[in-house]
Amino acid sequence: MRVKPAAADFAPRLDELHRDLDRAVCAAYGWGCAVLDDEEAMLRRLLALNLQRAG
Image 1: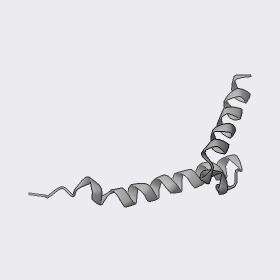
Image 2: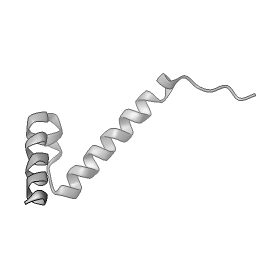
Image 3: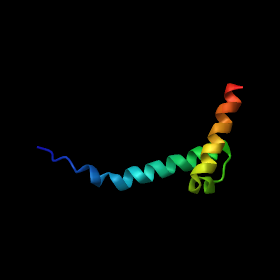
């Protein structure tokens, strides 16, 4: 019988994967990763993208 690891055992790896994804998204949009430290700036950029696509 295989013992399932606790969910907390995966938390550091999941956090690492989320950070990698955030950096990849920034690279895809040509944004500096510093925007990840400013939630309001990130939301402004995302809103601008949504408005551009809707327009």
